[in-house]
Image (tube, rainbow over all chains, first blue to last red; front, top):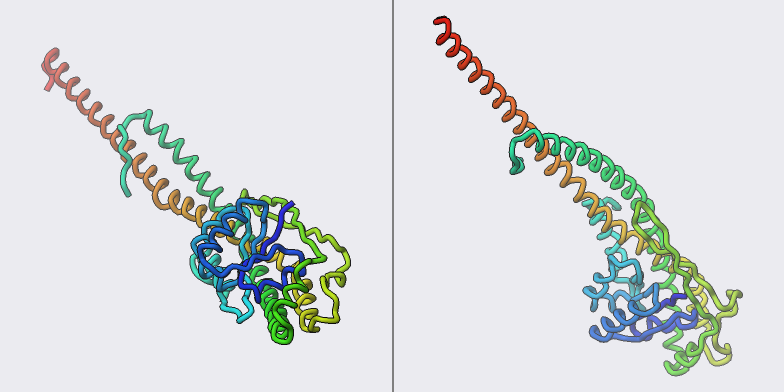
Length: 103
Length: 216
């Protein structure tokens, strides 16, 4: 059985605790990067990470882009949507098609 | 295009012809694979985009509730309320093969089946906005799982499409033209050799006839 994790600042992610997800409140880049590596190595299949937290550790997230597990998904933080998640979708299209044809 | 560095012999020629046939077949197959992957990718990416905007809106709503709850309640009380969850989620991970790209499938398993039984706190000391936040999040959660699935699939397929496209282009623009040019070169060289043998034989024949019968 696999588990689901949420990473971000405490105000953004504490609500997910009620759903039974494993919540990790981290804001330091090195600690987040280490945490992601640790979660990926253990039995976490899905990691939700807030956009500001993801922006700090984009290298680590890109590392897991081409591996089958875990699936790292960007979610908006409490102070609003930065659009990074949607940008990643458009980047995937650009990579596959050669140009962004979604618009 | 560069000619391959091979000896112009019949053996090399037949080898190259075989290679050309398999390169053409490989090219056709890879092209089909690329087209099909692209078709599947486009379906998935549209779903991804829709899901993402739905999930982002829903989380935005939940976050607004949460912000209000955080302002009317003390931080400690809020954290305590959410400290021991009633609900627990485990994921069953399957695998689906789409054109030899293995994409994961997640099936969530909840501990409590009743969706209203998720509030891990008494309502007396907590804000109603906290209830709103928790219920909004629990409503959108199945979509979030699907989003994780689709987003991973899109990433993996985008990688695979890029790889396949490179292979198709390498075959189409480098390997096949190279083979064709080398085959042409060997064929020319061989027929040139043949002509030169024929002419030298004619010359020898002339010389022999001249010696023997004094023909002109």
